[in-house]
Length: 323
Image (cartoon, rainbow, N blue to C red; front, side, top):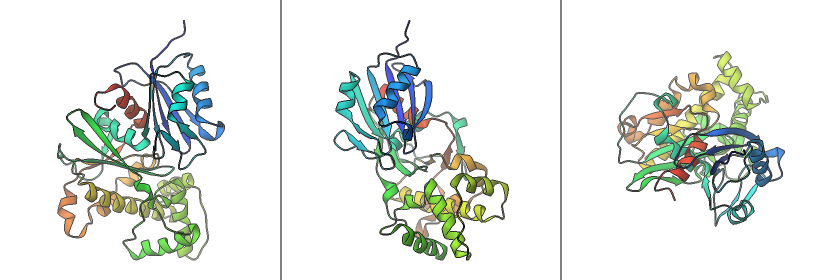
């Protein structure tokens, strides 16, 4: 007999689409599968193949977390050729519920449901202000950023497009890097031009240029070399990457008043968690002129959960107050 689970959840990034099935009132993910967006002409084709692989003929409720702004029920992905029309998707799959949420809104909504062993403290272990905003931020294909606050009807995500905010150089080294990368990309320099996988590669090129070379290296190779050699250019570049992330997260925490804690998400940092824990990020995060004491009281964690976006999408569907 064909098994029918009532809800499909998805975490649709710029590179990969992750899917899972959940039962009503549950956050337990079943049938998790990752599919590359470049292998399919559109999202609908990927979903149909996923459901076929799972032996599921009927779904009635869907929540997709997507890497881009949702405007009037439509999404054009920032870093992918896929597009979604919420009403068309609902009609095509004959759904009762079809929800589109920002991918970092899903990351944020997962935070209250993550076990402690999937959160690694970065810096001192501090208590949080339970009434204050939480901040979730992280580099991957782009840079995601979202606030989270508890309301009388449940947790409420505060999504935005913070990755496209201007990069703010704060040291002479930052300024030199800004000049190099701005020349490479032209126009305004959004911070995700640096705080992303492709940004890490640009940052490596910038450092190489400052050393009088013009070397290039793939992001995966940069992280591998940095882990293996703490005197390598890759290590220096990754350390600078952590510093810029610390500055960016610190700015966002000040703007939001994120004394509920800051959570680092995304696919890059967990791969280099041992280096990340050495303190560059935290030092830059706290270095806030007159607000250092304020910042030193905000705890920071690295999210180690493998699929927080799927958990957050399930929470949106199955926990009260999200829709």
